[in-house]
Image (cartoon, rainbow over all chains, first blue to last red; front, side, top):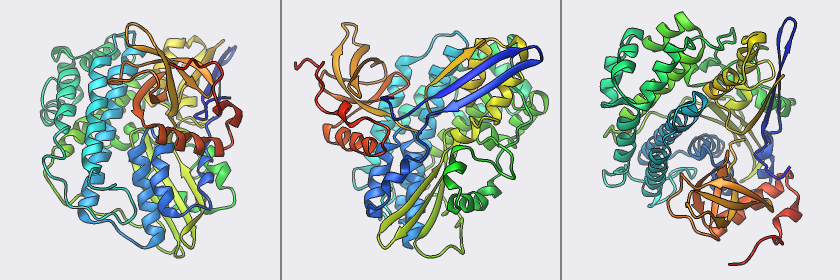
Length: 388
Length: 87
């Protein structure tokens, strides 16, 4: 094994009575143990460079956990910068799904040039908003971001307009508030993303993969913190469950109460079309928020473990793929333990939403259908799929 | 989990879109389609077969050292790379 990122090994076996699904993982779910013994401020600096795919979400959760453990808080300006950067990362990730992953899964042309521009713009935005100091250091004290520092957000808007919405994201949200509105937009918009929606509808794939696994509710966070604090934390982060059941944490789960998503889910459950549409809705909303000129940033998140002893902190962030949770315990100024709970472990749990979705494909399952559903839930890692 | 691996660019194809990198001492192809101006000798972060962005040699070394510590890598693979041709 030369690649620390690990991979998922997904095996489907057709049998007389359906499809057997086995999901194995070599993801290094306890890699954060290497931070034990280091000064906490060093960990805050190093961690996003190690977990670099969703470096901003990782830095957000880390900062929140470390600040809680230290009893410090960032300035309002730092909070605003963090919020902007997190939105930009989610935009970047959702555009990767829409421009590259979904087209490939549906045998359509990927938008690589557009995605390269998105990567450039997001990295430039990150550099600009961090030039005066790292907004994610615990207790960062930075002024509110200026228009000059957020200029590169325009390039993200431009890419989304051209390749996804064909209009301003706020207008898209207004126009596609119902399934009929979404279908009408898909017919006329002429963008590659519209073609994705049209393809799902035309090929009767809207409900593909639907299953009974439920979303992880926001209210679960205190119990998750307790599990991270407990003696079986390592086993828990590898195969998390809530109320003894696997749950999903995804853009679909996050947006399931939005009227459009709720209406689609009423018809198609947690199948492909509600998932794709949740990406579109979230992308639009994040772009609208990214353009906001508010300088104060959102209110600080509620403290997850109000009764925890000093030197303990839990932080969470809505990473692009789902909820990310960090928990740190300090020994003085050094980290005694550091645990991370990532969305891919929820979603690719051996009995989780992807396992259930794939099993539901039944003995007629094709590799294409399996790849579509895996893409729609999207692991943060490469995978090997075998169908026999 | 959420890891992109630092890798050094060894060769770039004439089309400019594909490169051979050293990933843990193993030569692997990656796509440069998402990266602006990467050159032979540069370090890039690699995820699912794509180079995401260039990083400084210092940051690459730091990240690789952390990964080594995580114990999943054979330290010998990250020493000198005998198959690499110096430009």
